[in-house]
Each structure stands twice: as C-alpha cells, then as structure tokens.
Length: 328
Image (cartoon, rainbow, N blue to C red; front, side, top):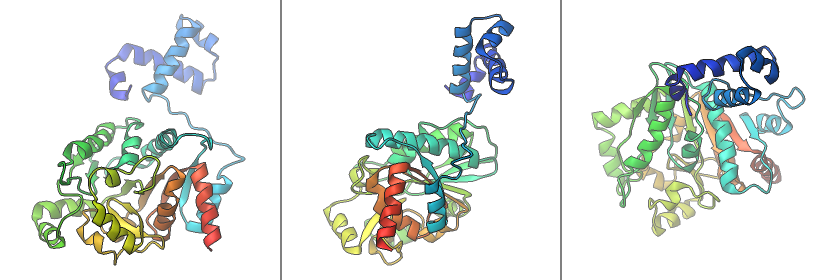
C-alpha cells in the first residue's frame, strides 16, 4: 500500500483521512468516530489501519526519559555521530534484526531526503532491505544516483542494482541515475581510462554533489551475507589480497581497515565506488548496520569519519561500544 495506491481510491482515502484526523488529532475514541461517521467500530479500525499502511499517518514514539538514550549519547561522545538505536531482542534472527533496523532507517531517510536533493545509494543487501520499507514522499527536482557499479564476470548487475535504485526513485518521485560500470575492474588502468569519458564524468560529478548518502557496510562474516562477498564479485585471490591489506569491510566496494585507512589498499584502485574522501564530504552520510558481525567494519568506518548518522540495532551498538572501550 502506498500514497499512489491511496490516490486511486479517493473515497476510501477521504474516509480514512477523516477517521485519522478525529482519532490522532482530536483524540476521539473509536466509538465516537463510528457514531460521527455513521459506521461501525470495526470499520473505523480498518480505516485507521488503511491510513497507516498508505502513509497518510506516520506514527513516531518519543520518550522524554530516553532521548537521547544512553547508547546514543555514548556514540555522540565517542565518535561524534548521531546514532539512532533500534530496540531489538537479543534472540532475534539476523534476518529479522535487519528488517527492523531497515524499517527505522527508511523512516529516518524520509525525514531527511527532500526536494532539490541528490541521494547516493550503495547497492547491497542492507540498502535493498531499507527499500522494502520506504514510505512514499513526493519531491521535485530530486535524483537518486548509484554510487558503484554492479557488473561482474557472471552478470551485468543491471537488474539487481536497477531494481533497488528505482524503488527509491519511485518512492520519492525522483530521477534515477544508474552507473553502468563493473563493480571491480580487472586492470586499474582500464578504470582510469573510462573515468576520463564524458558520460562517466557526468555521473561522477553527480556523486560529488550529492546531499545524502545511504549505505550499509560490507562484511565477509555477516549473518545476512553482503552481496559483494557472495555475488561472484571476488575470487580467492581477491580475498587473499584484501586480507593481506588488513581490510575489515567496505562501503560501496571501497575497502578500509580497522583504523579507518583506505588510501593505500591496492585493491581499491580497481573499485568503482567513490573515493572515500568524496563520501566524507557529503553532509549526511547515513549508515545502516544490523548484527554483531558488522562490529569490526562499523568501528573501522567510524574511525575513518565515514558516518554522520548511524541506524543500528541495540545489541550491535552495545557490542561496538564495548569493543571500542576494550581497545582504547
């Protein structure tokens, strides 16, 4: 259900909007609303559900006793980032944990991205999960740009990356700008030559002007496999080279170490993702993380100054703080 779907049902949408205003704004009971609308209490309940599902109503919970929470304050003090901690029971599976974090990330993104803005997306399992929970929001003169290529020796990657990109574009009424290049080049000199082409330079310039970047963190050990590690993008020699360089994770196929360094990792000369200095120059850098296996890349990304806003589950946030303090 989306706002576009709601517009195709104007009568029901009008009733749902009326019921939502009476319930959420005027604090009427469902019985009182049913009397005013000359319908049943169960019908009012269905209308309120329709209002939430279609995006007519967006519910937020704010606690004056826990804003910001202790963990959020610790992330601000230690790393200088704004953390959005998602409560998730410790026994939750990695897949469900990601879905709950992705839902919160989608709602946060909707509050940040607006008209006349450019959103950069690093395709992958996490960004795809966020796409499933986007609430439609109409913007104008906005665009979504792909940050890294998706082709490898098995596939062009166009269908996978394009589907993710267009979910965001459709949700926000934005223009989708694809980046039709390999995820990794066989020869760094090929990348350098292609980067001189005007058609490629145009996309690179859009990336440099983006207002918001949304990304997950690649990890070889993640419970929900990072697409770049299991999608045929890396072979055994690549994994060996990355291990020798001390890489702990990646953002948009650009790898970094535990201390946040990346410039002298040879493998990055073959990567299609943006130089991480470009990412660091983006005003809003939203990182979405779920699962304890992401703690090492999370700490590396924080050390490298790659994150301004972090959406993370409570258990992973706690583990990151504990590991950081143990290493300090």
